[in-house]
Structure formats: structure tokens, C-alpha cells
Image 1 (spheres, rainbow, N blue to C red):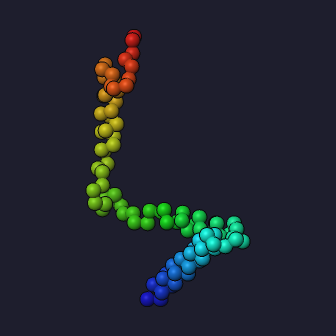
Image 2 (image 1 turned 135 degrees about the vertical axis):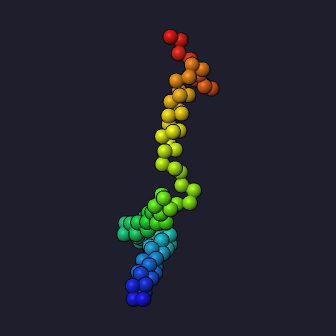
Image 3 (image 1 turned 180 degrees about the vertical axis):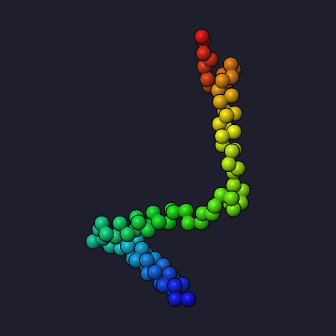
Length: 92
């Protein structure tokens, strides 16, 4: 129970600090590098993939050999004597 309170307190405290920095950058005339660093750091943290699961448990995950098979199939089409759209055939 105490761990949950600490986590929530830290999250709320850091969230309040981030919003303070955002508002100070937006409205304040004397905001500077500290506020910009806090805002950029908080925004960067929001981009982290925190909802990751192992591939074996992921719903709709691509099978392990699928990309290798697609790569090998692509090699066959590149070796084709017939050029694809927009390609120039080799005159030799």
C-alpha cells in the first residue's frame, strides 16, 4: 500500500512540475533553459513504449520467420528478367 502511495505521489509531483514548466514557458517572460529542459524531458518520456509485452504473448504478432521469407521472395523478383514499373532493363 505504501509503495502505491509513493508512486502516485511521485507521478503527481512530477506531473505538476512539468505543467508548471509548460505554463511558465508559454506565459512567462523570464523562462529559460531549466523550464525548456523540464518540458522537453517530460515530452520525451511520453514517447517511451511502456506497454510492451514479450512477442510470444503479443496479440497479432508477426511470426519469427515472416520477414526472412519476404526478403527471400523479394530477391526472386529482383532477379526477374522483366523490369518492374519505372525500372530500366539491363541492355547487356
